[in-house]
Image (cartoon, rainbow, N blue to C red; front, side, top):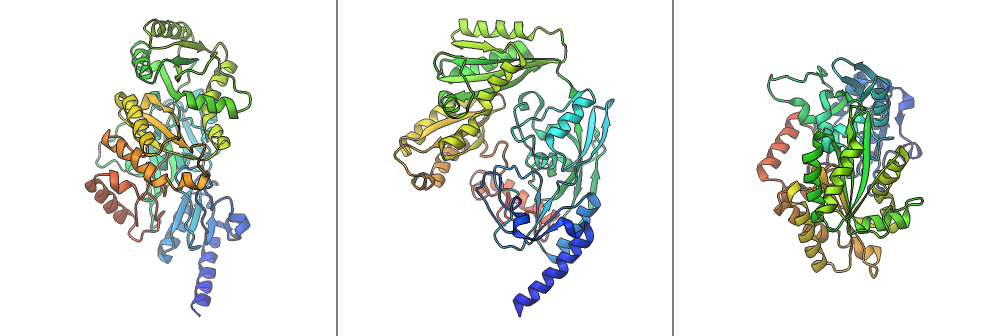
Length: 479
């Protein structure tokens, strides 16, 4: 009888949702839900009572009001490209996935105020294109930009390759529109660059991973479009030289230094082996490699000459061994392919245990030395695949299994290996999640590294904004 009553209750509840968004946008069949219930990494898979696809903010509000009254959990989802399982339901089959893909309007472009107002379901690449069409530039750029959404970028405070110059997603946002757990709508879309009237609610929702409210729209900053770019791949004698080169470039190029990407020789080796069409410009793979880019809005700026002089001085000083400066857009793309192909190469080469960490920039290479020593002592034979956005302190510190290990043996090391890496990150006063978010992946580790007072404040805020714990439960915070 209990199961029968639950089924009747579900029928009535789903009918309410269908009345709000239309029956065609309440997906209950497993085949229709399949793309929504598994994360991009295929690490987490759940089951959903329904996937609900609202068309606008009013429908999001009505859906949340309905779910809050029924005490049904809601999993907000954008492009479902997350790396930490933050948008995947549990396996109870009792949660609703709130897919925001239909909220995809470019609401307004203000060329005087340099802003663009967009729905949360807008694909990042479409926002970039809209900015270009208006003669402006939206600088957020990451590998999933063809499918990730602005709402997801904001919810995780995504990073990407241009953080060094322009900052994380948080720095791109001026205002938000957010629907709270009970359906109330906070309209914070003023787009002001100065607003000193109390608590900054905008920053509270950015990075909250859908646990405090559902972002439905944002006012984003636009920039002047770069008129000239120059890209170079630099061979280094060792990891320490990377920071020396970073300091040299920063001193000479200033804010024209847009990207400073680092990889070890193991990463470049892996790309050359597993990514078709990639070619190293160096006769041998160097111990460490940097991909750097300068950009300027002045078309007459001689960035190629400036970069050539800086790199020439670095080679003379022994801070670099060789360098290749792209002579065309196609050559620049080929150099970027060597960096961007690392994730693809890892997938093809076999399983890896991954860490998305942030450290004080000046201590990055010391950390890499200490961590390699600690990991090698505890788990001999693992392959180190270390790369990332060195200019903003973000490393992707990944380990590949030793040749003698099976995948099962390797995965059994996940928790103890995480402890070795993250304990050292903590001692260096770093963060165990730099740009991918906490989600499910790092949720249970977070209390080990986050100060108790900070954890208590986060739990207090969660109870204040979502007293019934319906918004993305089990993500970011332990329930």
